[in-house]
Image (cartoon, rainbow, N blue to C red; front, side):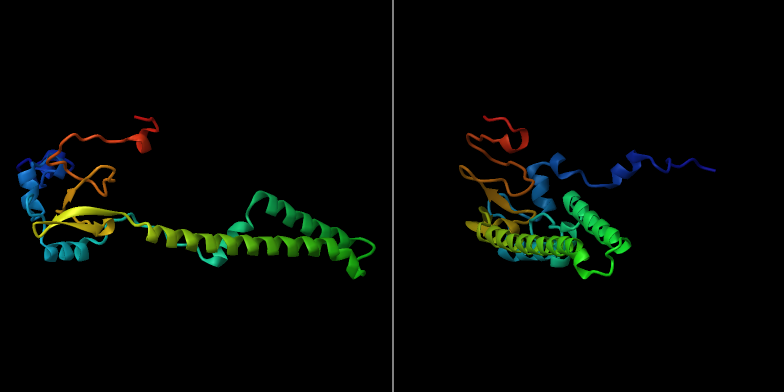
Length: 198
């Protein structure tokens, strides 16, 4: 019986894989992503890659429904205390001598109504604020210059695809993981990562 490679031997698995993009040269990346450093991607290729890979944006969590926001309002500590107080008020009045008197339950009912009204208003306000924030983020969508069909064109950041040659200017934000191919006088602000000023 011949001895083969160990089942979890990483050297065997790595030999069959392509090198990671950060380990490849610029020429190898050109071949991998079917692009040209001078001319960039063709518009047709960029559309195909965008259709295949999807937009260049982080996956957004699903937006909570109005009912979910309402229920989340009811689990706060103070709200839970108020609900316990309302239940206690109703229970005490139901077991006391004035249990037949409908006015003895007013306090508990009032607390319930106020808590539910407050949760409804808060949920509605939060829902509308989320809609406004989403609309504002769509209005301020970032753009960047890429080389396509041999020309620099301005595109929305979500349409940047693997293989695009991105041209940066002063103040531009890096829209994705990239390989720097050519640069003159580059300065990077890492303040968002480190919190330290330049």
